[in-house]
Image (tube, rainbow, N blue to C red; front, side, top):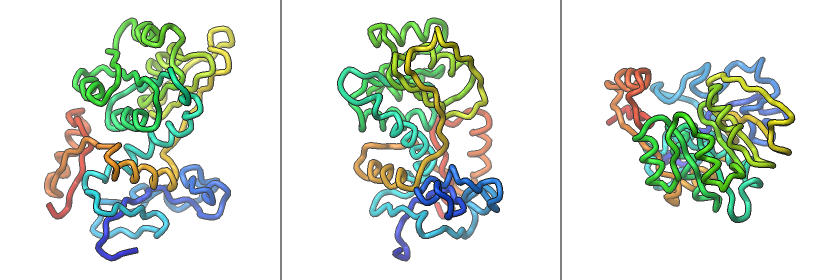
Length: 268
């Protein structure tokens, strides 16, 4: 560690002794139920405390990269990166299609990660025109929300469906949309935690397709995310607030007015 250097903090803290923690997968700690806290900022002081202690292994060096713009990456990039990494076998080779549902902070970065790591055509959908416009600027083929979404998505894929879908919302309608868009052998990863439910039927489900879920990511993933950020492959959308304006950032978050990740900068 270098005093005064910039680091990105890996938030999850597991027991450090179980099989999952030994692989850097603290989010899936086998002793989570008895741990004193879940993560930095979840059950203990976090990033807006005057001081915070962090295990040395949880610090990922940023080098000369902007630490303020990097702040959201520990969640908004780590989470979709881990989900996409698990689906890379489905997206290998030519002519593949990926679907991103929900174009908030995580969805915008998911589009960038998919573009950087795969040769897939990225299809993105949301109900907000400005969010779709930003995704289109980043190379995605956008499909507006509303009736006929699944049909339009299948039309883009030539009728066969997408090889990998990432539901960044997790509500019942978005789950159903993803399922209706899947190809044979496809993988649907549910990342959003809106608590939606769906049904599975042998005769209406594409053969050998998979529905799974992921939560946050590993410390190894975060090193990869920082490397992509430093190379310019990930550019998060950020709104900066002083500590005095932190409550305004929360108000805008609650009212749905934020169009980027809010970053509170204590000494700005």
